[in-house]
Length: 230
Length: 230
DNA sequence: CGAAGAAATTAGCTGTAACTAATACCCGTG
DNA sequence: CACGGGTATTAGTTACAGCTAATTTCTTCG
View (cartoon, chains in turn red, orange, purple, yellow):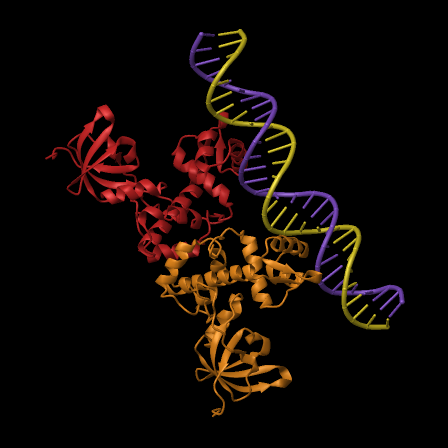
């Protein structure tokens, strides 16, 4: 019974690798190149670090660079997600910073806030279950409810839904969505899909919002139960 | 008018050196050895880093290792002091952490909190002018009122005073002082000084507190104006 | 004055985590 | 089956910031 609470000793780099691995990989393995791209480092750097992480039993290495988190690695990664989301919530709710703009700060702080401070912040925020972008916050044991969301762009014409999550890391686009009312909790209705030019006409809070398809990538919605596409 | 706000680019180490230099040096120069001791690094490391800091015009090097902050270095150091004290205030006032125990967390965070977040925290705390230990907080331009305080142990028998500052970095002793009521704002009276064994008998909040001399090093008081040693 | 001892510096290493350039490996296509 | 292109790896560097051991430089005291 040595218990998981021992670490907080991983270097910042390691924590970042694990977090990206988790977020890119879900369960399956991830390639060197995709990691390199997401982390903004060169491929050899990744090969290198993965070897170290494998030695430390945080990732499992498959053939041709495919890397996969071990249980320990996953635990560590989820802990980082938890920290990130609690901190974002704090930055918005308590410090009053802008929703669309807190990612970078949380990204730094998640590596440096002590457990003590994190718990105090969590308490202060009322143990939130979602961050300001609608992402669920894992509990202290890394548990996370699942929920079935779909991309906004996948709605059929006439279908209604509620916005649930906005992917962060892209302050620019997020600010635009926020402007248009695409925020967690907003009710939307897909008015029209123009397959020809890949443009969507979406109704949000009564007014229309027209957008190119990939411009609303990252807005995840929960479709209304069927039948009421009035 | 390029304005001072450019940096926030100094490495954590550099920031630490400058801070210690400031706090150890006041105005005058500081030796390699004292820096090494305070920073917990070896003397050669200090020589080395001082050379770099000198190159970057943050310190001026005199003979035999004596180092002195330049104006730029001082500005940077005071900025760190400001950050540290605002963060301590926040940790205590907002997060409800223990007074005697926030130094370490502030020490880490001061290097990683962005200007934006710092300003938001400062606002949230109501732009405090003192931290929880009674230290004055420099304003955004590094200005700091001066005030004349003396060590508690320097009071003459019968003299009254108000506790103004408790030096942090020594959680253990601070907790004991707090226990005894030696906190900023507390009124004290020196009952007796027993030169023979270097022991002080101090009255704080009505009850007595007996202490060896150096055990109250770090408690700074503002003596009451003379004459009322009733 | 000269030697002892303290203080500072030089020299040479270590570990972390990046980088570029060169090379090796695989896979699908012709 | 060989080859070209993409992917991964190896080799060799770099910067930072620390370290120990050895040496130099002051200062002080006998």
